[in-house]
Amino acid sequence: MKLVAQGLGWKAAGRAIVQGVDLDLVPGETFGLIGPNGSGKSTLLRLIAGLLPRAQGQVWLDGTPLHRMPRREIARRIALVSQHADTTETLTVRDAVELGRTPWLSAFSPFSDLDRQIVDDALDAVEMRHLAGQGWPSLSGGERQRVQIARALAQRPRLLILDEPTNHLDIHHQLALLRLVAGLDMTVVMALHDLNQAMGCDRVGVMQGGRMVACGRPADVISTALLSETFRVGARILTDPADDSLLYRFHMLENDG
Ligand SMILES: Nc1ncnc2c1ncn2[C@@H]1O[C@H](COP(=O)(O)OP(=O)(O)OP(=O)(O)O)[C@@H](O)[C@H]1O
Ligand SMILES: [Mg+2]
Image 1 (cartoon, rainbow, N blue to C red):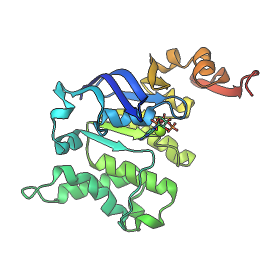
Image 2: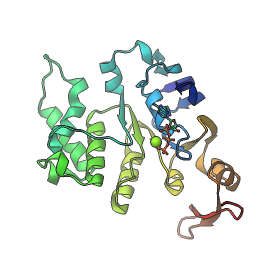
Image 3: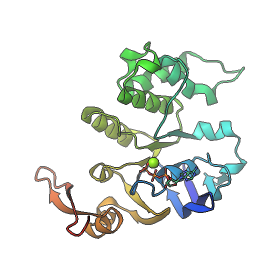
Image 4: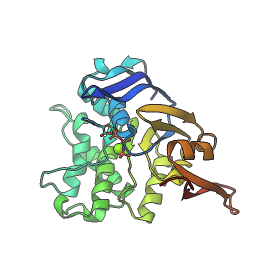
């Protein structure tokens, strides 16, 4: 699915939280969004999903303006897992993932064997099937995060938006998630703090002070100049002799604090 966004912006209490962001997502690409705390990543992800009232700018999905699409039509195309995704209800894991099927169900197409299969596949994708019957409140932080991702997968969107999807995950599940995302037949936009993980994206966009200050291939964008200006850190770029992939080793700048 082709997503084009122009002039995206959002204000809170008169302050521009995001401003003037243009974005053109290539179908099937994995786009990483990086930037310091408070730079506007989560806000931008919500703007892309059409979830913020009083938004500036415009988003088109395959040429159709997002604001002309009914919520249900948007939910068939875009799934968002937010940074603090939670659910207060006393659901089981399976119930929570079944919620992802909601935009596809109606009186004429009730929950079917196919929906059940899609939910099973989503649970398998995040290695949560064995806990399908467990109650949501009893899950660990990382388990909750994996269930939210399964819910989004069960939605079968064409654009998957993930806000810091690896932040609660152990290293195995971080790598499993990144591999899963790379293999998905859908466009993915995800906010990441781990810049070494961001190197695995097809493209990255850098947020700073509400603006997208750089966008392009990770190796071109994530330069030592950008790291010092935007992230206020220094870095040495190392090369993994096994496969020549680049790795960053970060340090505080001499003149910082
Ligand atoms: N409703 C709101 N009212 C006032 N300020 C807001 C509101 N929502 C967000 N902000 C502010 O906007 C800025 C951007 O927030 P956002 O959550 O988009 O940042 P982020 O880049 O996702 O940060 P993080 O890396 O910490 O998740 C922050 O300074 C935040 O305090
Ligand atoms: Mg955020």
